[in-house]
Structures are given as structure tokens and as C-alpha cells.
Length: 453
Image (cartoon, rainbow, N blue to C red; front, side, top):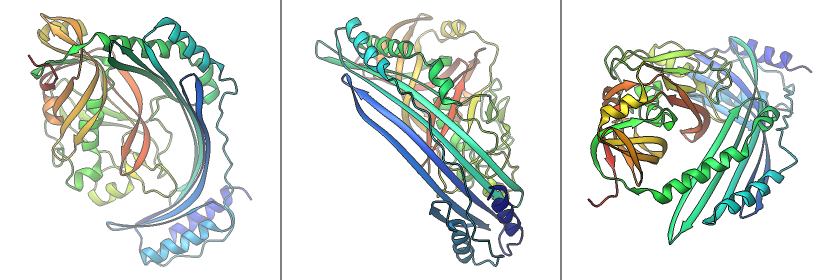
């Protein structure tokens, strides 16, 4: 039996549901493989397969969902009946046929000698290394969706490799890491992978941290390098522009459409159509085509990111941002590739304008309160700006502020956009995303530091 036949039957049945605003049938099979290398040996390898289906029905503000592992032996028909009972709707019967979906097999290299080679080479180059660790993962998934609009199928591959180095010198312990993640064919990824380059970048960052001084604290100008990765844009701004958080009163951007939320030089875009980007896709997990959404244009808030539920409830256009991490989870409005568009300013001129402040080359994790916009983010690679020039590396630095305050405090926007891949967590679900920015000069950020003077 072809997949088209049962999906067509499900689509037709969904058009006959009485009492529901929307419904869909979602199926997914996935395979992931990974390894963890540490202390000169492979510590762990794993391979995981998942398979399942769900039926979802929307009725006003309420959602009924029934899910089951496996896609054969009438699983979809059983979940169909359960979802209809949960939603208290009447619907035509769904045939109890199988929904065959190809079993994916994620590619993973057989030859892992490069891990042992890297470990030996790094230790030969630096006598202070106490640990070298590497992680590698590859995943492939196939999914299919039926709704009243038709039937859709997609396949997605993600691959990642990272190196972390731990140094110890005179009782001081510091670390550095470097990762590269990509969406697309895994064979092409491993053919293009440069583990030596990533390893040396990780070692360079660790050595830099050994020389870093304690960071001073206070309110000061901050220059975010294009390589800083767009953490502030994603965490402190992007999440607050997701429609479910806006209308559940968990966003500082609620009611701000048409109002100024950033400096006039700032335009922020979420674009799921960027070729090859980690957060890109052709259709979202609700069958809506991927799109480019301008969230902020010349400082004015223009739109929120929506899924089908929030678009229907709150009267906003569909933006194609309904994403779910698995067959048993509900779609949520999620970012894809979110970034500040390039401007006209030069990074060196930003540093000169800052005078005395902080230059940030790489950001780490942190915390954000989307309701108030307040954030605290770790700086993993930063430098002092003294007399308009970048000087000593610092450690223990953090950036503190609020999303709107930070956006309005942007004084200059650089010419070159840089994107960084990552995994976004929301509502217990993980999604691959990309965020980025050109270089930015921001006034009025509080820098948290550990310097006593």
C-alpha cells in the first residue's frame, strides 16, 4: 500500500469532522546515532530509533491529541477514535489500514581514527591539557502529515561534531570548545568536516582563558562581534515574539505591534527558507510552507510568529512556524533562523566609539524572563575595550539587561551577517535553530564581572 492512499483517506476524513476547527494526522520515524570520546578512548556510542503517530483536533482554545508508538497495525485509526472522543466531535470512520513510512538509517562514519589522532596531536602541542573530549551525532527522520489542506511529507537530516579541551596550569583550570552543526546530507557533512580546525579553535579558546583577567562590573558600552552568535536576539527578543507567549501574557512584546521596540537601524527577520541553515525547512510540522517573516522593521515591531492554533485564535497570519519535536508533542510557534539584518557600520569604528567597555566574541548560555524581557547571559570569550582599542581577555563576564532596552540601545549595526547553529528548548521540546547578527554596538548594558577593583 502506498503512503498516498492512507494519507488521502485521512485528509478526506478530516474534512468531514463536525465540531472541530482544525485537525491533522502526523506520523514520524527517526534514527539517530552518536558517540562520545574522552581521555583517549570512545566512552559511549548509541543508536536510537523512534516511530509513532498522533491525531490532533483543535476546538476553540482546547486541543485534543492522541498518540501511539508505531505507525502500523491500525495505530492511526485507533488514535483517530481516541482523539474524536476526547474532543467530543463526530467524524467519519478512518480505515484501519497501515501507514507505511520508510525506516530511516542515519549515516555515521565507520572510520573514527581521527578522534584518536586529534587527541594525541593536541596533547603533543600543549602540555597543560588534562582532558580532550569529542562528541559527534547524526540524525535522519521521515515524517508525513494529513490535514484538510492535503498531504505532506518531508525528510530532515542533522549532523554535528564538537571538541572541548580542559587545561590545568599552576592550579588554574580553564576550558574551550568549538562545534560545527549542519542540516543536510550527512555524507557531505563528514566529507567537508575539518576536525583539526575545530580542535585548534577549542585549544585556542582554552589558552586564551588561561591568560584572561577578571572582568570589571558596571554599565558600559558593549560591542558584540558578528561571531557572538545572536544569543540576545534569539533568547531575549525572539521568544517574546512567538504568538503563544504573547497572548498567554508571557511576553514583554505583547500589544506592541506598530510600536518602536528597537533603534531605527534595527531590522529582525525569521527566515526558514535560508538554504542549508540548521533551522530551515520546506514546510513546517503543520503543512504550512516555510516563509520569511519580518518581525522588526526599522525599529518597529511588525509581526509575531504563529502556528495554526495561535493564528486562528488571535487573528494573525500564518507564518509557517508551527514546529514539534516528535509525533507525541503539540506544535508550538517556534523560531527557525532568526537574525538582525546587516547595516552600514564598521566594527573597528564601533570599538573606537565605545571608548571603554567590553568586546564580546563568543556568547554562552544564560537565563531570560520573556514576560519582563530581563536576561543574564554568560560571555565565554570577551575582551576589555580601553581607549578605543581591544586589549586584555577577560573571564567571569556576563551581560545583563532587558530585550527592548538592549534593542533600543543599539547605536551601530555592522555590514557582515554571521549565523550560528544551535538547539532551542521550549515547552520541553527541542528544535534545531540558527541565530545571528552583524557586529552590534549597544549602549547601556550592565556587565557583570568578578574584578574586585
